[in-house]
Length: 437
Ligand code: GTR
Image (cartoon, rainbow, N blue to C red; front, side):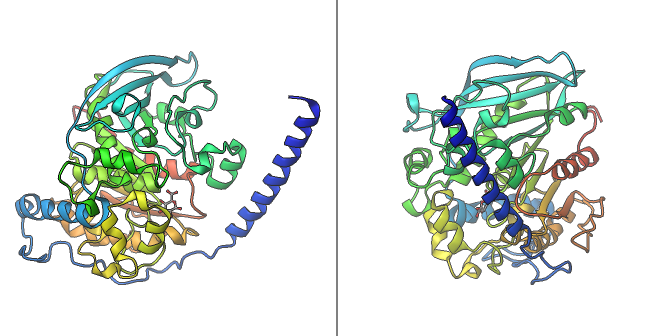
């Protein structure tokens, strides 16, 4: 590039940076949510009679009657049909890094072909996921923290040339290649890349992938992929939404991780930020294998209650992201109280496994209050399994005891060092024990 073009590009970047940081400062002035809990309790009460199903009294009632009923409603009203079972094949394994220093043992790429029931628009007819797997030094089997990220594997491992292999469309915010320092300034240090070294030091493996390898996160473009994943015979208004497709992808990754002798299949931990937090919760609600979930700022159709329409409304989310959901969800725009289910019932489907919900004080859109009340609403289902109650009473004071946990840090929507610190201490407390214990 000539000197002149470099100067012009530099000037453009500086001006964009100043504009965005001015925007960022304005955003920092968004009001904090109130410190005192507001809003009504979650409804319907999680164990109460539901439609024709009588009140739940025992674990068996929950598992045999209520859970299947709730899963059916979540699919038909919100997320669309979950894709059917699918075998996988490991196409290749490639060692990307084997650092001499530090706690990271190896970083590799495992390319997985998923044998979907129907062929679709993917190259070769079936989806291929590039899984990046970090294994710490030392003796396993290790617990593994697994989650999908926004912008593809090149953003995940920025210093590793050629890591991204996806040929799928990226959402606008990734495809334009916004300079990394701006993304970090706005969305936090770990917006794209988790703290690899810290995880390895603490004895956690990390599995990361780009859910857009299966369904691109772009409205309209996503449609043919969703059609191909939708089980045959599903009514059109219940076609699989992208959140369900990503949740199902996560289960296919769990298939691979559970079969890896370096990892402990009893300690596969799912995490996700925002849309991927929604997918992580949904995935564990339908798949009993993940041992715990951390959902950060998962908001509407994630951890936040939807009936009160606080934060992002059904109308907002289905306008911006129609591809995320069953078309049927859109019918509840402006009348979310007509939904049969609410998000405390989704969290309850994870019982008795540990769940950490992270929120930000200025992230009104993500609704910290509704997320707190959802945990409270899920708690009676946990008590059926003898788990300690969610006894936290203040948004800002985690009580650090139960398997349901909540925190609210300062700031906006993003992934910060303190989020990972909260998650790791939660996993340490609830699941990071030797497999033999
Ligand atoms: C927001 C969206 C949320 C949330 C978030 C994200 O714009 O309205 O539902 O999921 O994006 O994924 O970052």
